[in-house]
Image 1: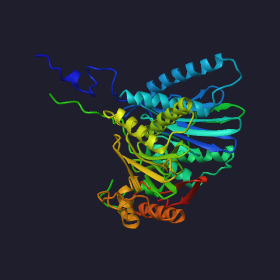
Image 2: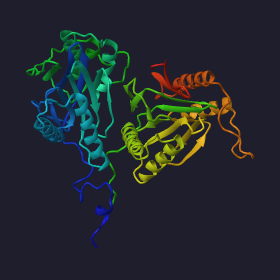
Image 3: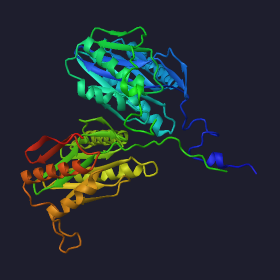
Image 4: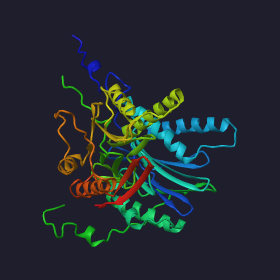
Length: 242
Length: 223
């Protein structure tokens, strides 16, 4: 008697390869902020395979057309597929050859629809995306999750960044941050994540997009300080804890 | 044979509260502007109110991606209606359309909790309240979302709506003035903010009357 339970399971991942997945190789937080001249985004270069940090040179910040920058956390292979979709989108936009090009708002909307439609088919792209850019002087920064939840704000973050970076940004973000101040703020957040997020690696990139164009920095590391009193004697004040 | 369980849910609750009150010649529609997920706040100034037609405003809380998709579907259906009938949809017509749209996805629902507010063809305020699968009725006032259980008893107390069982049928719209109703709504939200973690940051209030539309914002506690 062949069990037909696999076929009848709405959410089976065995007999039906087009359904709910598990993530395999994942990237951790992405942080994005608006600053005086445009958008700054930061992400480390780690690709974790469960609890192993398998890849240490994964570029999670990429350019999209003339005006936008995308940062992704979550499943890396799904991000690569999203980049293929975006590549085709930008290609067709360019082929119109009409002097008009898709801005960050449009790309964000496109990504939202892609993510939501995959969620509707119970086959999500397992990513949380940050989309930022500048077009005609207008700065834009938005976020999309794997189930299609999306919004725009002056600062956004994915994953652990929501818990560890957003509070810092809420206190210290300002409309008129200079580039140097913005980088310092992002580094402060990334350092925090490095201390407390176990999937974080100390090799990151910061990307900047302004009306003039986009630059993604060479990978670099943050200086860390491990001599905080709290790190040295972590259970002081809470005996029996660890 | 153990059945395999989903390791992922297609739904999330992004929180928030919506309220609408119908008056003799006005309608107040309000919603907070906080968007959350789990115990985190995603953003503090996100609008849950959508203008579907000149005289129909919908406030929706629940799963934001579904709310946005629902707003999109209704807006585009209204655009088609305008092209075909050369006029705006009336609020009761939009109410029926919303109900049908929700029931259409009865077996994979829009996780959206809606209140539709506007002016009917006589210029009287009308409020329609919905569940996630399209069950609806016209009422004098309604609250939906995470703070609804805190607000509804308060509105019941303040607006003394007549029993729908009475004969002859009594009008459900409140005799309160527009200014009193707006003040009542602000009170509702400050109270709900105290006890509901998903409600707060600020409240967006839309007031619809014969003269047009007015928008007010009031700051709420951000904790």
